[in-house]
Length: 273
Length: 267
Image (cartoon, rainbow over all chains, first blue to last red; front, side):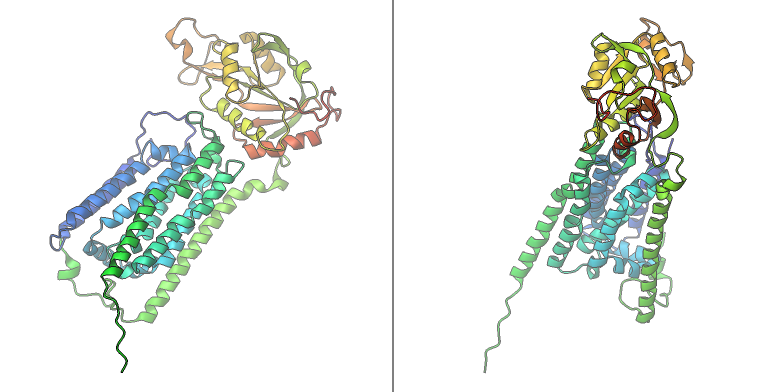
């Protein structure tokens, strides 16, 4: 038994595999969140919505990490690896961020003395750079081939994805207003950081003539899926897999901006003397 | 659990609660900058370390295989054996492949990992532009289950031009011996060798694995094998080695026999 998903030479089968480390991590995450609610200052009408958002994000995170998707992504299919990444960063992470009430995040950052660090990292320029640096580094063949083959490395990759995803979304939908730029800036930031840049590494995967990842090329085949086809599909997922999630958010941001502009009274020029 | 940070504890000298009450902004900026530089440096170092650790394979000077991606070995002659192809016709390996770049693989169609993996990677490499097309010959090590029809169908998943050979257990064993590879054995559930012939009619007769040499033997136009390729060789490795084989081991360059096609590559 292994505690976290890592590459394996065993032929793929649909027999479930147990990863106690994943269960422990997910259990601690949920327990920490629920226990933190006991410190809530006062009931709020948004509380229920936030809890559901967090629980949905938590469930998606578990689905992306554990068997079968986690196992397939760790050592069999590049498409599963990329699906995991998209789910982590554009589905689970924003829901987890939406599920954080302001008092909880402020309290956590205060206790960890991490407010200044997070406020720096959550600046759109910095968050965008960090997110894409993590994207490029964690999808480089040298990183994947060396880290996915052991449980600690695999855990580190998953954690890097989660943290970079949380950072990406903090300026967009985080609970701390002082970290959020104006609505149009948020839209442009999200489009550039999460929509545009990933198309470049995605293009490398799609148009490469040979499989770039040794672990997926040498892995026992799953349903006869060729390694190069698998990699090209993974590249397509990296390029456009997040669009169904990203575009509605972008549309929402710009609609809110338009409404905001409409409700702002127009400036009237002072009559000249 | 109590909310000590807001009700009972005195505020820290430099609060870090997001209220924007830093008492020494310059110090904080310096600390933040140092932290950022540290994190960036650590990231760069980590990537560098990974790159260095993984980059050792490129040290050709210390490579006992002289830059080849297979294992270099003392040349062995193209083996002589005759088995039956998937059309039921006798196939004289040495005569049919003489002077041609040939890849010989002993395996079986029920193999769960190495055989389909090896052939899938090789097939992918041979589809790359500019890669010479060797003759690929697959000899079953499981003649009890690998009927000619099944062998043809399975090889067709990779390439219809691949030659599939079968025979009796004794004939296959003789072919393995001629090619200087370890003899294949039927394995039980624990991986221990058992009788080579499955028990006819038994429920478990169709559910066993076969231990076999997991290497592809490369025979060059000089009718010798200088290289064997264990599992783990990638497409780009084949694409680099196959043209080099034709350059370094042309027909008549020291082998026991010569002839065949002009460039040594098969159909």
